[in-house]
Amino acid sequence: MTKRFVIIGVLTLSIVLGQALCVFAFEQTGRFATLRYASMEALREFNDELYLGGSLGRMLRKKKLMTVEAEALAKVEILVEKAQLVLDMFPDNMHITVVILADAEDVRRVYKQRYGRSARHIAYYSLKEDTIYISADDTSLEVISHEIGHAVVDHYFKVRPPYNIHELMAQFTSKHIQD
Ligand SMILES: [Zn+2]
Image (cartoon, rainbow, N blue to C red; front, side, top):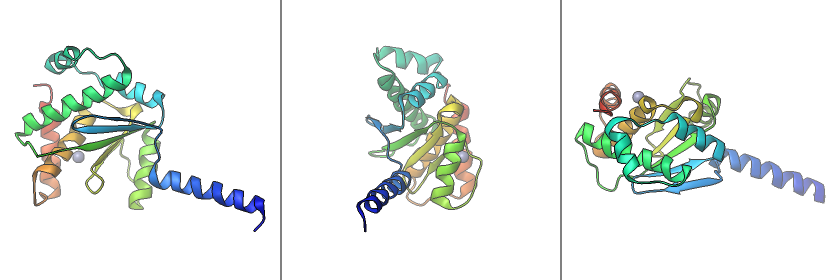
């Protein structure tokens, strides 16, 4: 193999690996969640779209956060805690990953890669990976609290509930997240 081919080979391999592993440049870890995001822009958008009002907002303001990174992570942590309260389920050592992608197209691409089929999700929770994939563009309190609901349910039950029940509990979580 010539040197040029080796370089092309290495480049191709790193692109393939990069896509397969979803290598993210940035990461923030807290008690309940690790946030992963490909760019600060995606994180900023996620943080802007995820507005916490009422008692959730008061919990956030108490923390006196200085950076977008800290604020975005704190919001997710608050929502995991609140989702546990709403569901009255407190699984031990719950920790999830939240992967923030730029837009719905990226979420669809990752879903297709993982499952080999298309779906029009703006966010989804992967039971196998303990991970929420979410489009920064489409982030809202309703969308992320629904997915966090799935995550709490998944960590709580030793035997996974039927799909419709799982879905019902996720809907219940987002409906009552601001109570
Ligand atoms: Zn759902």
